[in-house]
Amino acid sequence: MAVPETLEAPQPAPLKKKVAIVGGGPSRRLAPFGDETWDVWAFSSLRLKTPRVTRWFEMHAPGDLATQLTRATPARRSFREYARFLRELKCPIYMQRRLRALPHSVAYPLEAALAAFGRCFTSTVSYMIALAILEGYDVIGVWGVHLTARSVYSRQRPGVEYLLGVARRRGIEVVLPPGSPLRVPEEPVLPYTDVLYGYDWRSAGAWWRQVRRFAAGPRGRPAAGAQGRSAARGRGRRTARGGR
Image (cartoon, rainbow, N blue to C red):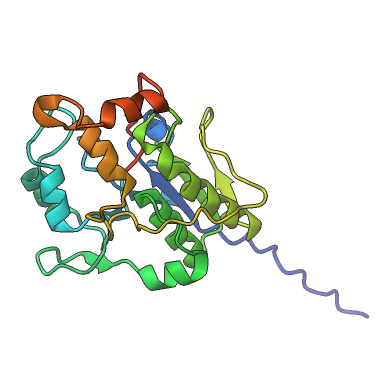
């Protein structure tokens, strides 16, 4: 009499490796903070509630941060407050280099990212997406990153969209919240930049220096020559929270 074959129980599908990249824009409230199948990577010196975070990113050098965060405001921490916030984090903090004052700090793998994707890094978010691709995530979601055309962060958008396109072409699922202005190109083209965000912060050719000169001219007035340039680019420019 034949012995019936033993049927093996079906094995559950392996969990996908998922990361939520969370900025400071309004759609951050839709991020999967409560779903622990997602890693949560966040950034920003804004006073925002982040219920759960598994990695933090601060791509500005401490000296450059100190010149930006000169005082506390209702929306943003001062440099001293932000430094204390970073010290109190219990997760890895990706930075340009490891700092002894921040035991959880980790040096960002810049050379590996440049070798893999080229000089496309014009925002913190672009560094985050690149690292997620390098680490083999199956799903990359982006919340709270708007980079709209009417904001000063619009110059950061091409690098972010390029990397999302690279991710999708490599078979990575890209998740965006409803109404996101970001687009994922089918044929991503490298948006080459001479100056790398964060690393080249003090470069004379950095676009953000032009923006800051206009925004912070003498006694709040536009810097010399900036008013005409601004008019040519269009009036009513607003700053969105999704960048940096």
